[in-house]
Structure formats: C-alpha cells, structure tokens
Length: 116
Figure: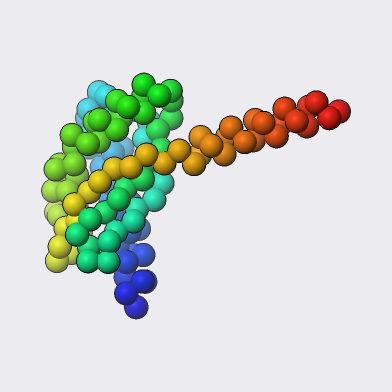
C-alpha cells in the first residue's frame, strides 16, 4: 500500500509543479522546462523533481538557477494545493535522458546512412 500511495503523491507533485512552471512562475531565466519525474522519499520530507530543459547548456544553467531560487515558492504552492500532512522540501535535478536518447538516435541514423 505504501508504494501505491507514494506513486500517487509523486504523480500529484509532478502535475502541480508542471502547472506551476507553465502558468505561475515568471522568471525570465526560466526556459522551456519539462518535469520528467518526481521521486519522493518514503517519509515525504523531500521530493526530487527531475526536469528537462530544451536548449543549449546556457539555457540549462539559467533554468536550473531559476528553479533553485523558486524552491520556496514551489513548496508553498504545493502546501496550498496538495492535501498532505507534510509538504516535502523540493530539490530540482537535471534529467538529460531525452538529450542522450536524441544523441543516440542521430548516431544510429549516421550509421544507417553510411551502410547504404
């Protein structure tokens, strides 16, 4: 039962943070950011929010800096919008898996092009 509840909490946090990033956060440093996954600790004290940023390394750095400075705002938003006894401390982490997958696909296309 604990695992299912944790999965639901992770999904709720993911949805709320995504909504917040799209509609409420007005930091000019924030680029095109997508929440890819959320991992909440079993005691609900911390939530790692994995994000992907569309763009070059500069956009990644600026967006992660904007998210780091908005941590308190994000936590307060979660406190107001989620019915949890404990509101987790939010930590943003980069998720470069989409970038890595695109790189592998481009390499595969190159190999296929050389084979024909």
